[in-house]
Amino acid sequence: MAILGIRIIGDPVLRTPAQEVTEFGPEIQKLVEDMDQTMENVDGAGLAAPQVGVSLRVFTYQIGEERGHIINPVLELSEDYQDDQVEGCLSIPGIAAPVPRRRHVRATGFDKHGNPLVLEGEGMLSRCVQHEADHLDGILFLDRLPAEEKKAAWRKLRATDYSQTAGRTVAKRSGSLGSSFGAGLGK
Image (cartoon, rainbow, N blue to C red):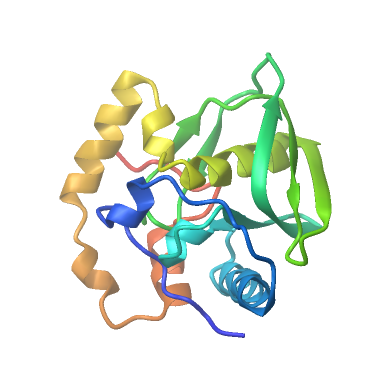
């Protein structure tokens, strides 16, 4: 297993809809294992394949004791919304804001061996699944913000000096810039 580099906003792979996985074998299994190790290394709640430069419909997650992955997820969302909670993103270091998300999610897909998988939950798990699935469609959490919050986030993003991240490990970079769920938007 390996710690993978995380792509930062501005990289075209983050805005490109990912392709479905059609072959399940050692390569996809290694990708999932590497993503899981990377997610753990940076203490992330989730990690989508495009965030590590791979345009495939795969993401890993870790919410409390619940940890796993899903390939080619198809989401069914409740009609109602949960209370907004602050989200951050490993690909947008230093930026976090409250994001509207649906209360409940049911995701169907496959595990790394090609076996059918169902992932269902509410709260942070639902929020994480929606966030990571957005990555697979080329959508960033900034796109989900109300207009004023979006403007504030983009202002902060334009003012952020990413040169401070050069030469630092992914874990140290993410820790110093507060890129996990629950970090606040510093205005």
